[in-house]
Length: 316
Figure 1: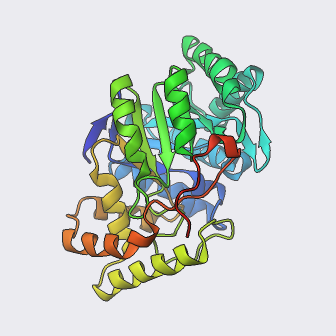
Figure 2: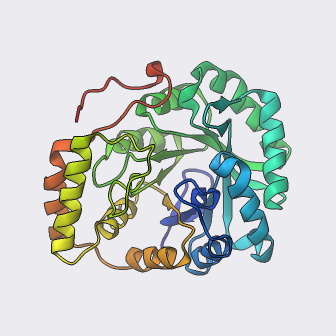
């Protein structure tokens, strides 16, 4: 599978990476054996990066990876996890918790180092703490050899720009912001390139919005957004194409993003994504679908503290 450089880290990531949130049953109850097999399918299919977090399944995702990673040679994959968010309303970005979280993640996943550690959903806390306490504490973990590269992950564009301006990070992971419906993450490309920060994209399906599957209960899409997304999906179906295929191919096509992270606990689904990643995109259908989605182009929602978000300029 095609690889791309991750900023100035020296790491080359495959254009499609395995997201392990599904191993934590974030979307549905999963068959444990199938979930473990999905990791093998991803690695054997060419993906070389696994992304997880202690928040996914409140530790379950990391524990599941700890069942499967010892059977996979360590040089076949890069491993990234996160810290700071541990439950829906439980955030702790203190320096003390940084050290504890790294050690616990290492123990859960049965590895001796983490290639990437990200501050998870930092838009829920004061940005100054991330800059002045959390990231410096993470740098100490790099000095100890437990972590190789550090960065941030989350949703609002505003807080990413603040971090890039005020902190020293190696990598950045944005989600739901480079999809068929929302390409706001393009704003980050020139900033990251100037600073040598590796830019990663996640969630090409926008939490199932750009699929034929039922949306999770927590999805924030408005009625208008849902209706128009369904129209786009139906248009694809009329042409014999699953909109998820178009969504995945679009999100991995832009080489300014080192990789696109998506995950499933269904090994057949993972194998299907690998097939799609190696097939050419239907440019005509892409333009037609983007036209259908135009009324909700770059619609976004508020996540975390209001002051960490851009003003809502697009309503739907």
